[in-house]
Amino acid sequence: MASQEIEALATALSRLPGLGPRSARRAVLWLIKRRETSLVALLDALGAVRESLVECATCGNVDTANPCGICADPRRDARALCVVEDVADLWALDRAKLFAGKYHVLGGRLSALEGVRPEDLTIGRLIERVSQGGIDEVVLAMNATLEGQTTAHYIAERLENYPVRITQLAHGLPVGGELDYLDEGTLAQALRARRPVG
Ligand SMILES: [Zn+2]
Image 1 (cartoon, rainbow, N blue to C red):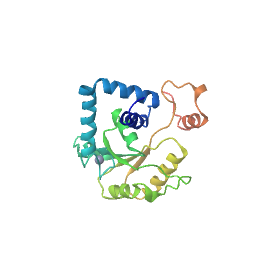
Image 2 (image 1 turned 90 degrees about the vertical axis):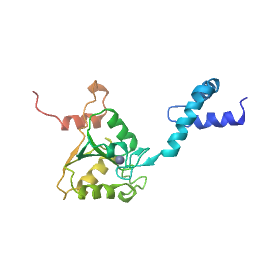
Image 3 (image 1 turned 90 degrees about the horizontal axis):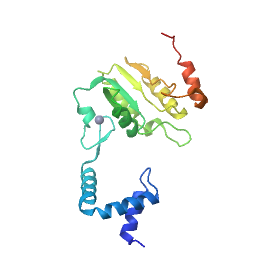
Image 4 (image 1 turned 45 degrees about the vertical axis):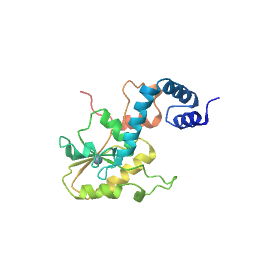
């Protein structure tokens, strides 16, 4: 039987994505065995993040500085703005290093089912950014879900009267995807987005 404190740590860790109770227990044991090195390093890192974590007032990214590292980076193309649903999407796109512009995090997607309305997202702030000028292209990088696409359509409509090019991620065949294994939605998208060969 572990002590109350150790149980509490295991419970807290088991709530992390990808960790169940078993792997959380294993992590706790691992940390206890290395308390002078790994446990102290983890504590320091958690403490430092807790102290300095802020939401970027410009784009909604989570970073240790406001404006965030991306907004403050002068090498990034401020004329291209990529709109994503969540911070996780921003990080995924940025890790892939495919987009050299700036971002805007909506903080979710429109959902009639869950009662998420435009005013619950940062759509107003997005319109404000675009209306200030200096942006040529807005890339709508919503998820390929019904709600994601509804959100993209809504934003495209709201931006209709601004002099910006509005583009959207192409949703097609995943690399290495076999037609057999694809769901109908992906296949339909791929077919609609077909282009001439060569
Ligand atoms: Zn930012």
